[in-house]
Length: 109
Image (cartoon, rainbow, N blue to C red; front, side):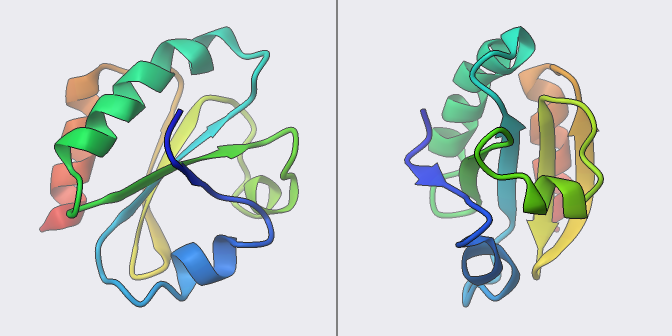
């Protein structure tokens, strides 16, 4: 699991008001979600691949309902990329590593 865990409580400081201007990738997931478990190793690889360039973390939607609700997350896994505190890309459902990389590369421009 990713070392960075986002919650309803830390989201504002760690994503919206983050002092760093690097993009933030959040994997919205739940322990009971099969596709979420399939995506998890890919998210871990991306965290290593983009270390220092993108902040990568997870948010358990069962334990944190406010933020996923605020962003209209209806299906999981949903991977959202934020830049300057604002969502710039949302990918719903399990995707290939290449699909996530393409979204990250766009956010890095």
